[in-house]
Length: 557
Image (tube, rainbow, N blue to C red):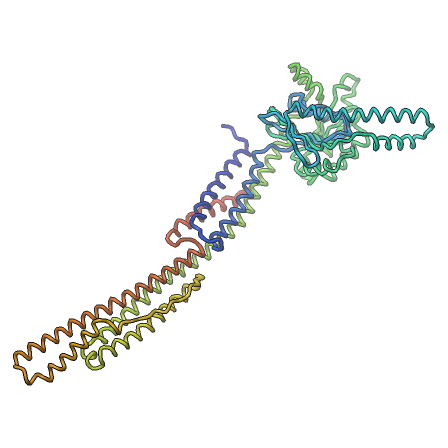
């Protein structure tokens, strides 16, 4: 399949954009808060990508080709010769001239713009509307002519007075319709495959304000201009003045002259002795510095040749040379400039987005380190506290200490110490979370181990042991030893249960703190970016986008 350079570039860029959009879509699903850095990055990338998507559509659209020049030089006929048909009605009423835009379409229709309102019609209906409007202009001109002749006949007026009289009559009686633009949608290929053709009003005409505004807008967007001269009138002052005005006001760069001169109606001077040769030489001497090419054509012969299928007449018209000039000077150059412009846009947007992504990734990696640091701190602090309190529990539940200091007192002291240390650790770990924007209120950890069931059992057994010791003199030796040993075993057993329960309680508290800190860290990370569990996938998506942007940055156009 054949693709023009513009189509290849469009397909390539569109493919890149689709990859970026797919990654953004997945990232957006995984982003939960509009205030998150991830969401803000996605929004900024989407904004740029939307602008690029709109911009590259121009790569699929035809270029704008203007046909310009003084009135009645055959611009409409020239356009018909370029599209190989007689679709565009020749406008022979200067005062009714408007912008006529011809574009290729599968559906033949006409859009008529009055002021700022556009209405669509089938093509024949549109032609009828235009003909009716122009008929009103013709009738008003006839009225003006009749009145002027009567005044001229019955009054002895100077040339100046006659001009003023005619001007006054035109202001009063000339019909001025409000159509400012007509868009012709026709089923034609050829030059319309690559260009939308704009037939402009003569620059020497008094234009309606809206028409002038639209002309200026189109001039700024023109990819090529065909300036039409009449072969019989190449040295008119008005033509020269308008060419100078065009160069001064509409040519944006000396390095890029996008105007071809088409000298029309050469059939009317071809048969006269040396007239065509003289005209060619004179045109080149006068205008060689104003145009990138000068082509001599007969649009009338071209149209007649197409209609009658007379190839000899078509070749004689020289219209193919004008088409070739349009291709080489407008299509190829415009394509190169447009592609270069799109690549430059990509490069600028890519550099901007790469900076945003680099900042985002830098912050993300810093916070990933902090997140992992919190996990490392949790493991370290928990192991340290666990080891410390395992020793404390062993000392606290030493039977001699329980007997000497009392079970309740021992456990109450342990309870107070454990509560202090657990809350200190919890606060310390939470401070590390705060750097990740954690704002949840902290809950105080309450420790309650001094009212456990084992305390009463041990206290009772120790009390029993003391009583047995006092009554030992009244018991037989065998029975004394037996009862005493049984009680000691019971105390040891209850102490072991207490110790086990305390260690289990410690594990539960530490596990609860670990879970709470991890949960808060995860929530904080999620609020700022995305789920920590999918961070590798997230980074892969960001890197996919970044790689495309780097490729855009390498474009040279």
